[in-house]
Image (cartoon, rainbow, N blue to C red; front, side, top):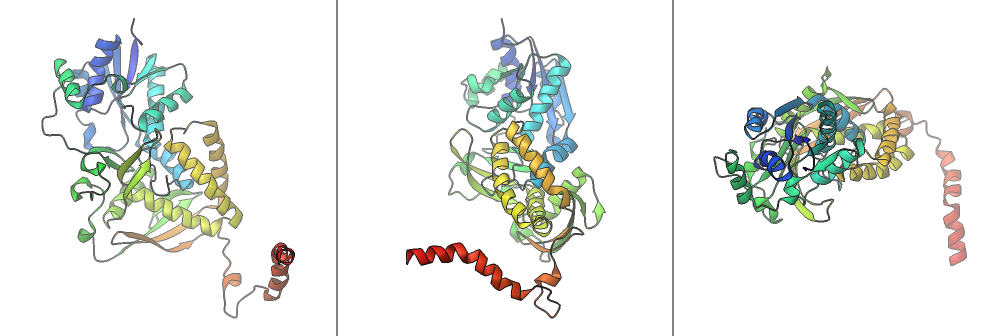
Length: 399
């Protein structure tokens, strides 16, 4: 008796997920494997994927376009929350996992599958994100993770696949592990496992080397409505077009690279290289617009919320009750976050050089030092006396 009769397998077209197909059937007695490849902006990688899945033994191969949903339902909320894991990583890869988990659950319900499967190993973050996300969306579904249990080396995995007609990689495989979607790329493994090794230029695809960037700056004006980016330079753009154009413009100036040692969910440290040009600049611009439109206490309290929010997403808890509650808080704060932010792109640096909003609570009459100053300077003395009273009393008692 197998662990499941019909399984929806998250499929990338690589060796591991291809081998999962015969492995599930031969070793675990699964009768039918349906693969699901989520198109989240990987580009031409998805071309031959359907044929490869069918050739590897899948009964059906699904390729589902999720790009717009990915941006609107996952990326935009994280921008509203200024989500940067450990103050640096904008969750470009992590955000794809709850999206794929939802697509797997939807496909399982549509096709009557009693389990879903993925090709994650026991060492990474993605297994946590998939398993917990699927459990939150449909706790009755079984989650199968063959690569976490089969114990085969890379060479053994390739040899196992060859027995079932899965071709081994035709060229010497890259030592790097790369994941790409519309929001960015993550690169790890190989020589990068030594934290002192400088990343070779060849691993980057979305960002130019500084030496190759233009010698003149580019200025881009990003328009937001209620915390959501909606325009570039006054041109209204849909979610995919906006991210795509901004990736090109920002990356073309060498902006968007991250090299960090991060703390994984499973307790190990991992050296990661990321490219996320548009996402980084959008968060930077969004935070700046909040400084113009939110009160001091909301701005400062929201920073504590943002850190919790980011950790929840990174740790695979997108569908958790606390994340849902924080979503409500963030959404409420965004009602006034509309306006335009001007960003200067030049030689690896994105600098905010201007911002405006019809909902701004910045008052030139109060801020100015000219003759137009409307601030009541005489009121400051009484304010300072009351404000400093606890400190004064403490000082008198402790002298």
